[in-house]
Amino acid sequence: MNKTELKEFLDEKVIQYNNPTFIDSDPIQIPHQFSLKEDIEISAFLTATIAWGNRKSIIKNAFTMMDLLGNSPYDFVMNHKAHHLDDIEHFVHRTFNVDDFKYFITALQHIYKNHDGMENVFSKNATSNSTQTAIYEFKKIFFEIPHAQRTKKHISDPLNNSAAKRINMFLRWMVRNDHTGVDFGIWNSLSPAQLSCPLDVHSGNVARKLGLLTRKQNDAKALAALDASLRIMDKNDPVKYDFALFGLGVFEKF
Image 1 (tube, rainbow, N blue to C red):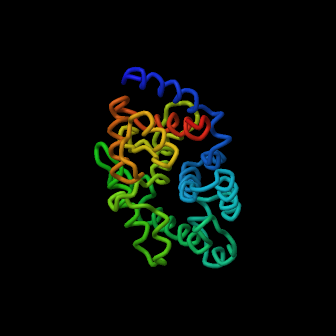
Image 2 (tube, rainbow, N blue to C red):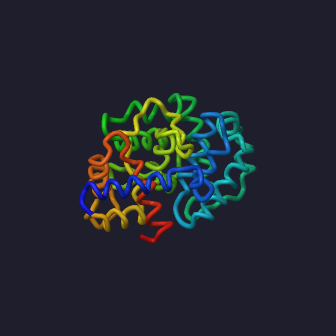
Image 3 (cartoon, rainbow, N blue to C red):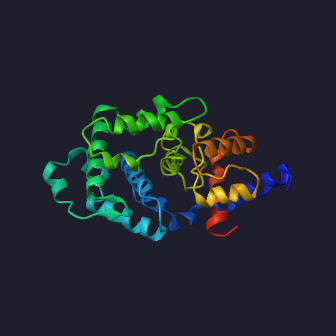
Protein backbone atom coordinates (compact mmCIF):
# COMPACT_ATOMS: atom_id res chain seq x y z
CA MET A 1 0.00 0.00 0.00
CA ASN A 2 1.13 3.53 -0.72
CA LYS A 3 0.66 6.26 1.89
CA THR A 4 -2.78 7.25 0.63
CA GLU A 5 -4.00 3.66 0.56
CA LEU A 6 -2.57 3.00 4.03
CA LYS A 7 -4.37 6.01 5.48
CA GLU A 8 -7.65 4.97 3.83
CA PHE A 9 -7.22 1.42 5.14
CA LEU A 10 -6.54 2.55 8.71
CA ASP A 11 -9.31 5.16 8.65
CA GLU A 12 -11.74 2.36 7.75
CA LYS A 13 -10.43 0.25 10.64
CA VAL A 14 -10.84 3.18 13.05
CA ILE A 15 -14.51 3.40 12.06
CA GLN A 16 -14.86 -0.37 12.43
CA TYR A 17 -13.50 -0.54 15.97
CA ASN A 18 -14.09 2.94 17.42
CA ASN A 19 -17.76 2.40 18.24
CA PRO A 20 -19.79 1.32 21.29
CA THR A 21 -19.60 -2.39 20.42
CA PHE A 22 -15.90 -2.15 21.32
CA ILE A 23 -16.72 -1.29 24.94
CA ASP A 24 -18.09 -4.68 26.02
CA SER A 25 -14.80 -6.45 25.26
CA ASP A 26 -12.47 -3.78 26.63
CA PRO A 27 -11.40 -2.58 30.11
CA ILE A 28 -12.86 0.84 29.22
CA GLN A 29 -16.22 -0.66 30.23
CA ILE A 30 -15.33 -0.11 33.91
CA PRO A 31 -15.28 3.73 33.85
CA HIS A 32 -18.36 3.59 31.63
CA GLN A 33 -20.25 2.43 34.73
CA PHE A 34 -19.99 5.95 36.16
CA SER A 35 -21.26 9.44 35.34
CA LEU A 36 -19.43 11.71 37.82
CA LYS A 37 -16.23 13.10 36.28
CA GLU A 38 -14.06 12.14 39.25
CA ASP A 39 -15.54 8.63 39.43
CA ILE A 40 -14.79 8.17 35.73
CA GLU A 41 -11.20 9.34 35.95
CA ILE A 42 -10.34 7.45 39.14
CA SER A 43 -11.90 4.20 37.92
CA ALA A 44 -10.20 4.67 34.55
CA PHE A 45 -6.82 5.34 36.14
CA LEU A 46 -7.02 2.28 38.40
CA THR A 47 -8.25 0.11 35.54
CA ALA A 48 -5.50 1.30 33.21
CA THR A 49 -2.93 0.65 35.94
CA ILE A 50 -3.69 -3.10 35.90
CA ALA A 51 -4.28 -3.31 32.14
CA TRP A 52 -1.70 -5.91 31.24
CA GLY A 53 -2.14 -9.64 30.76
CA ASN A 54 -5.37 -11.48 30.06
CA ARG A 55 -8.18 -9.07 29.16
CA LYS A 56 -10.87 -11.05 31.00
CA SER A 57 -8.70 -11.06 34.11
CA ILE A 58 -8.09 -7.29 33.80
CA ILE A 59 -11.82 -6.59 33.57
CA LYS A 60 -12.69 -8.98 36.41
CA ASN A 61 -10.07 -7.52 38.75
CA ALA A 62 -10.95 -3.92 37.85
CA PHE A 63 -14.56 -4.62 38.81
CA THR A 64 -13.25 -6.11 42.06
CA MET A 65 -11.37 -2.87 42.77
CA MET A 66 -14.58 -0.89 42.25
CA ASP A 67 -16.43 -3.23 44.64
CA LEU A 68 -13.74 -2.67 47.27
CA LEU A 69 -14.27 1.08 46.82
CA GLY A 70 -18.00 0.70 47.40
CA ASN A 71 -18.60 1.45 43.72
CA SER A 72 -18.08 5.12 44.62
CA PRO A 73 -14.37 5.57 43.91
CA TYR A 74 -14.18 9.35 44.35
CA ASP A 75 -16.12 9.31 47.61
CA PHE A 76 -13.94 6.48 48.93
CA VAL A 77 -10.71 8.18 47.88
CA MET A 78 -11.64 11.50 49.46
CA ASN A 79 -13.33 10.31 52.65
CA HIS A 80 -11.74 7.02 53.61
CA LYS A 81 -10.15 6.55 57.04
CA ALA A 82 -7.25 4.29 57.94
CA HIS A 83 -9.55 1.50 59.08
CA HIS A 84 -11.26 1.46 55.68
CA LEU A 85 -7.91 0.59 54.10
CA ASP A 86 -7.34 -2.04 56.78
CA ASP A 87 -10.61 -3.66 55.70
CA ILE A 88 -9.13 -4.24 52.21
CA GLU A 89 -7.31 -7.47 52.99
CA HIS A 90 -7.06 -9.17 49.62
CA PHE A 91 -6.42 -7.89 46.13
CA VAL A 92 -3.91 -8.92 43.52
CA HIS A 93 -3.51 -8.54 39.78
CA ARG A 94 -0.24 -10.07 38.66
CA THR A 95 2.41 -7.96 40.49
CA PHE A 96 -0.05 -5.24 41.61
CA ASN A 97 -1.03 -6.32 45.12
CA VAL A 98 -3.19 -5.07 47.97
CA ASP A 99 -0.44 -2.84 49.39
CA ASP A 100 -0.01 -1.17 46.00
CA PHE A 101 -3.77 -0.69 45.77
CA LYS A 102 -3.90 0.92 49.22
CA TYR A 103 -1.09 3.30 48.32
CA PHE A 104 -2.80 4.29 45.08
CA ILE A 105 -5.92 5.22 47.06
CA THR A 106 -3.83 7.34 49.44
CA ALA A 107 -1.88 8.99 46.63
CA LEU A 108 -5.05 9.80 44.71
CA GLN A 109 -6.44 11.53 47.78
CA HIS A 110 -3.22 13.53 47.95
CA ILE A 111 -3.56 14.49 44.27
CA TYR A 112 -7.15 15.69 44.68
CA LYS A 113 -6.66 17.46 48.00
CA ASN A 114 -3.31 19.11 47.33
CA HIS A 115 -2.93 19.34 43.54
CA ASP A 116 -6.48 20.02 42.33
CA GLY A 117 -6.93 16.62 40.74
CA MET A 118 -5.33 14.53 38.04
CA GLU A 119 -6.40 16.67 35.11
CA ASN A 120 -4.70 19.72 36.59
CA VAL A 121 -1.42 17.85 37.15
CA PHE A 122 -1.31 16.50 33.61
CA SER A 123 -2.47 19.63 31.82
CA LYS A 124 -0.07 22.04 33.49
CA ASN A 125 2.94 19.86 32.66
CA ALA A 126 2.09 18.92 29.06
CA THR A 127 3.84 20.52 26.11
CA SER A 128 2.14 21.72 22.94
CA ASN A 129 2.62 18.38 21.19
CA SER A 130 3.27 15.84 23.93
CA THR A 131 2.07 14.54 27.30
CA GLN A 132 5.20 12.48 27.99
CA THR A 133 6.83 15.07 30.26
CA ALA A 134 3.46 15.44 31.99
CA ILE A 135 3.48 11.71 32.77
CA TYR A 136 6.95 12.06 34.28
CA GLU A 137 5.81 15.00 36.43
CA PHE A 138 2.63 13.18 37.45
CA LYS A 139 4.68 10.22 38.65
CA LYS A 140 6.88 12.52 40.77
CA ILE A 141 3.84 14.09 42.42
CA PHE A 142 2.08 10.74 42.83
CA PHE A 143 5.03 9.41 44.82
CA GLU A 144 5.94 12.53 46.80
CA ILE A 145 4.31 11.11 49.95
CA PRO A 146 5.79 8.12 51.83
CA HIS A 147 5.59 4.95 49.75
CA ALA A 148 7.11 1.51 49.26
CA GLN A 149 9.77 1.53 46.57
CA ARG A 150 8.22 -1.49 44.87
CA THR A 151 5.00 0.40 44.15
CA LYS A 152 6.74 2.93 41.88
CA LYS A 153 7.04 0.37 39.09
CA HIS A 154 3.29 0.55 38.52
CA ILE A 155 3.50 3.99 36.92
CA SER A 156 5.83 4.16 33.95
CA ASP A 157 8.34 6.91 33.24
CA PRO A 158 8.62 7.97 29.57
CA LEU A 159 11.80 9.90 30.35
CA ASN A 160 13.34 6.60 31.42
CA ASN A 161 12.62 5.17 27.95
CA SER A 162 9.27 3.54 28.78
CA ALA A 163 6.50 3.52 26.18
CA ALA A 164 4.10 4.04 29.13
CA LYS A 165 1.33 2.14 27.35
CA ARG A 166 -1.15 2.01 30.21
CA ILE A 167 -1.02 5.65 31.20
CA ASN A 168 -1.11 6.76 27.57
CA MET A 169 -4.24 4.65 27.21
CA PHE A 170 -5.73 6.33 30.28
CA LEU A 171 -5.01 9.74 28.75
CA ARG A 172 -6.66 8.66 25.49
CA TRP A 173 -9.77 7.72 27.43
CA MET A 174 -9.88 11.04 29.26
CA VAL A 175 -9.01 13.45 26.43
CA ARG A 176 -10.40 12.13 23.14
CA ASN A 177 -13.99 13.03 22.35
CA ASP A 178 -15.06 12.15 18.83
CA HIS A 179 -18.69 11.55 19.83
CA THR A 180 -18.59 7.81 19.13
CA GLY A 181 -19.25 6.95 22.78
CA VAL A 182 -16.02 5.07 23.48
CA ASP A 183 -13.49 7.59 24.81
CA PHE A 184 -14.85 10.09 27.35
CA GLY A 185 -13.37 13.46 26.39
CA ILE A 186 -13.92 14.88 29.88
CA TRP A 187 -10.52 16.61 30.10
CA ASN A 188 -10.93 19.77 28.06
CA SER A 189 -7.62 21.27 29.15
CA LEU A 190 -5.71 18.83 26.94
CA SER A 191 -6.01 18.23 23.20
CA PRO A 192 -5.99 14.89 21.34
CA ALA A 193 -3.13 16.35 19.28
CA GLN A 194 -0.91 16.12 22.38
CA LEU A 195 -1.54 12.43 23.00
CA SER A 196 0.67 9.43 22.27
CA CYS A 197 -0.48 6.03 21.08
CA PRO A 198 -0.73 3.30 23.74
CA LEU A 199 2.06 1.18 22.29
CA ASP A 200 1.90 -2.51 23.22
CA VAL A 201 2.81 -5.81 21.62
CA HIS A 202 -0.31 -5.84 19.41
CA SER A 203 -0.19 -2.27 18.12
CA GLY A 204 3.58 -2.45 17.79
CA ASN A 205 3.57 -5.62 15.69
CA VAL A 206 0.85 -4.30 13.38
CA ALA A 207 2.63 -0.95 13.04
CA ARG A 208 5.81 -2.74 11.96
CA LYS A 209 3.96 -4.87 9.41
CA LEU A 210 2.42 -1.71 7.93
CA GLY A 211 5.75 0.13 7.81
CA LEU A 212 4.75 2.71 10.43
CA LEU A 213 7.50 1.59 12.79
CA THR A 214 10.89 -0.03 12.32
CA ARG A 215 12.34 -0.09 15.85
CA LYS A 216 12.06 -3.57 17.37
CA GLN A 217 11.65 -2.62 21.03
CA ASN A 218 8.39 -1.18 22.34
CA ASP A 219 10.05 1.68 24.21
CA ALA A 220 9.89 5.48 24.32
CA LYS A 221 11.98 5.81 21.16
CA ALA A 222 9.62 3.49 19.30
CA LEU A 223 6.66 5.46 20.63
CA ALA A 224 8.12 8.73 19.36
CA ALA A 225 8.64 7.17 15.93
CA LEU A 226 5.11 5.75 15.83
CA ASP A 227 3.65 9.08 16.98
CA ALA A 228 5.47 10.83 14.13
CA SER A 229 4.00 8.37 11.59
CA LEU A 230 0.48 8.72 12.97
CA ARG A 231 0.67 12.52 13.10
CA ILE A 232 1.38 12.57 9.35
CA MET A 233 -1.98 10.87 8.80
CA ASP A 234 -3.90 13.00 11.33
CA LYS A 235 -2.05 15.70 13.25
CA ASN A 236 -5.15 16.66 15.26
CA ASP A 237 -6.10 13.18 16.47
CA PRO A 238 -3.23 10.76 15.85
CA VAL A 239 -4.17 8.30 18.59
CA LYS A 240 -7.48 7.42 16.93
CA TYR A 241 -5.33 4.94 15.02
CA ASP A 242 -4.84 3.00 18.24
CA PHE A 243 -8.26 1.49 17.53
CA ALA A 244 -7.11 0.36 14.08
CA LEU A 245 -3.74 -1.04 15.19
CA PHE A 246 -5.15 -2.75 18.28
CA GLY A 247 -8.20 -4.10 16.45
CA LEU A 248 -6.11 -5.50 13.62
CA GLY A 249 -3.77 -7.17 16.10
CA VAL A 250 -6.21 -8.53 18.67
CA PHE A 251 -9.35 -9.25 16.68
CA GLU A 252 -7.97 -9.97 13.20
CA LYS A 253 -4.58 -11.47 14.12
CA PHE A 254 -3.11 -9.26 11.36
